[in-house]
Image 1 (tube, one colour):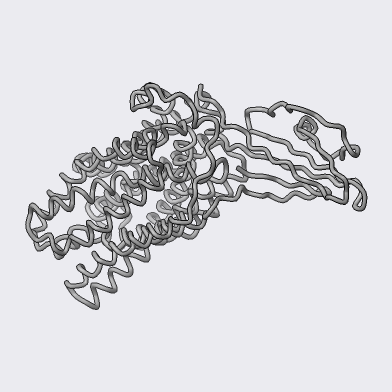
Image 2 (image 1 turned 60 degrees about the vertical axis):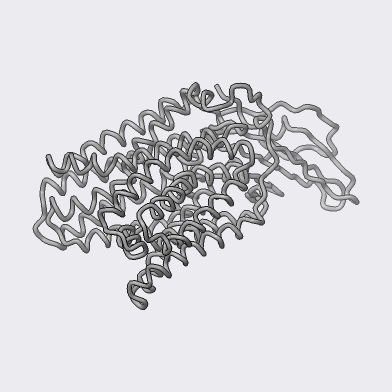
Length: 495
């Protein structure tokens, strides 16, 4: 929620204070360091840590990754019962213990057991983190915090990958064991960093009746299911850079493999450096979250169309090909920076507080399914024609944008646009009396009527908005000083 204080014609934006707000993005950065230490080297990492063959490691990771998705429903229910912060701390603990035990899991059964428990915690983690975001921030504060989290996490990924590379280069194969323990340590540290974070007081929507508030409630919410379906289509686009892009460059364009690493690095650096800036610019335009997410999807489609063009022309010059791929990655990354904060916060805000955990667990399933489907889908289409998977992604991105815009009017108003609170202070005489006014403004919703009205101590300034004129008015003697009124508009009801 954002407050704007207007004093003597000046305006200062005052975002709602989030208790321990620094903890979430810093913990996300530390978590990113741990994850970045093993994700780029996954198969090699576990092969050296466990001593098992690459084939066995790959099979175990695939099976346990799919089985780990079963942890999402109970994790969502646990969030609704115990709170996201407690569940988040538990997941950090499970992941820390799992990676600490990997070096001792030399046999297949031991590796499979540790991998299954760790995969379950990994699959549930994003949904719980989104629920925690919903608990500690509201309105535009959620957008800011989500952008900061994503930027810090991407920075952590890059730092973790670099750190693991240095450890392995210095320690050889033993460095993989050190990296596993370093990853465990990062999860434990991230859990400790979350201790100062405190949820905000629940709003009226948290007290909604909970009869039948299980996953049947989620399945009956058609607008939210449309948002989840649109996210599945866009989640395929997120898998394109890591899964499809390298194969396309090497197998279809016959370009050097170094271009794929450069593209991934460019994307990671831009997400870390420009994430907060781009998110802030989007918020300042007053764009609806649905429209921002749709714009991001449209930019994805534009980048994929450019890939089709490159796949048709197949430049023979490495410089020309590299320049074209850089342009593609820049457009793709801009789409990611616009889409990600808007789409994630849209899901958080659209979920009723009492069952937010279940809602976001269902939403996270769209990410997990897309991640599971993408490799086989992309490779099958690539075998037919190198441009075929990009053509599919153009269609899925466009369809996702259309779905988000179409379902916009069926979503809660405060989910589509963040609720803002405007505090207007006008001083009529510096040494006598002052007038403090509060206006609540929700974009697209209207102004809540005033419950009462008290006599004015001084004539209102002409700069006051119509909303401010309808707001409660209070005056105090100059000796005591003006006392600002505060108001927190209730979140919109679902339609």
